[in-house]
Amino acid sequence: MISKKWFWRALGLSLVLAFTASAAAAEDISVTIRKSIQKIGKLGGNPKATDADRKKMEELYKQVIALGMNVPPVLEEVLSSKKSTVPEKKASLYIAQHLYHTDKFDEVERKGTLLMKYCKIALKDASVDVRAQALEIAIGTWCSDTYSTAKEVFRNDPDPRLRVRALWKIAGYQMDDAKKTVRDAMGDPDPSVSKAAAEYQANYDSLDAAAAARKAAEPRKKPDPDRPLGGYGKG
Image (cartoon, rainbow, N blue to C red):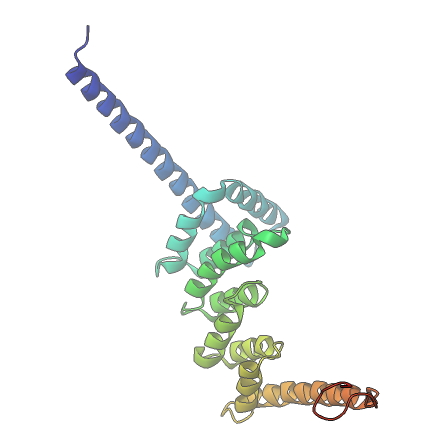
């Protein structure tokens, strides 16, 4: 008979070994993902890439995306690291976009919020190419952070092209804050931004004029002779 003391010791040891094995397996998967992203980066960053290279990239993308929830921690690591190359970061954004893509309406907000996490990391990158890709993904993502992210880019990004693109997204909203942002942007010191803002403001003015015209064209209700002023009916 094995004593209870030795039984619990043996069980504890087996759990530790199982956890260690599981952690090692997760580490192996992370290494595999990281190496795949590096390979994609090299192939994608090669201006002389052949059709065979592009086919290899597609296969690597599929392999990484198929690993599901093992992928996100590695993507965050690649996007946050200064050692990662621009092609590696762009590949990570592409993978994140496909990983969180959904056609199910009830999952759009949740997955969009998760995807936006990676966009926000990339939008702080030194490379304008990385930021540009992150912005395109962000403004095409449907979640509660989309507007605030576009506004953050418009306010803080040093590249006027990205600011104009962010302002385009902002101008698609009809709320007062968006209209004020566009109106204020007409006085922006960068001519490309102020010009775009003037165009978007003209669109707002056109929509407001059309709405006013529709309202003016609505037939007015004739007063009810049996309903005196004050809103009370017959006594």
